[in-house]
Length: 270
Image 1 (cartoon, rainbow, N blue to C red):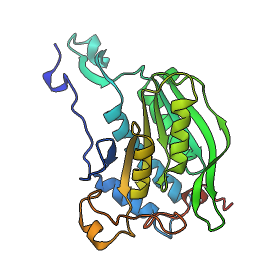
Image 2 (image 1 turned 120 degrees about the horizontal axis):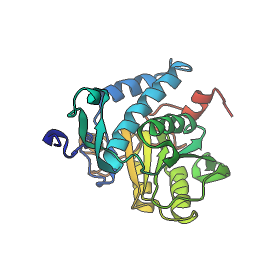
Image 3 (image 1 turned 120 degrees about the vertical axis):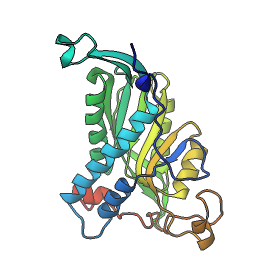
Image 4 (image 1 turned 90 degrees about the vertical axis):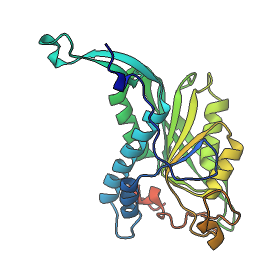
């Protein structure tokens, strides 16, 4: 018989209270906040930064996969089955044949996507898992302000029908790159994705506003909301309830933020 304790799963990760809508998930995770605080510190560089990013994305991916991927009933004999016919786990697990794509957006998203891709291969059937690669950069004007995203190249599988598409990209700043990437998957490939999920270490109110307006079906997960340039009134209120929220400086970098994460992860300053 199935153990009633594992007959179904109610898992949802704990979240910070906000008013951005039910497709935005700001995780309440003190361990992740501690690791992220260290990762943003001025004295942290490679290789420590790379190790911290891996730990953070393992934690974030755990929450996203558990909350968003489909589940199924399983009957799985254990090693004790040779001695006891009762040695069968009968309960719930993720559907191993769920189809998932992890999208690596160069440069900052390359390592996070590889981390998520490796976890997916352990949790699901490997033939159901794919990693795509996008090469993008910010497009800026003469004042250094971000005006959009520029594509340089891509290696993408054409079939996207019924797949869960994950976009692990550390910094959700303006949303221009993420909007461009998700629109491509929703509009330019074969089939319709089951869900598009952005996975960030930190996001700004500007990012949330831009992405939710442009992509009402997209889902956002983040470990931290950065709105350090907001008014005192906004900072004192539940996120998303007051005017005056701001997390981007005049050059569209996140405050408090972490600086140029793509440059730091790759030791490349071009």
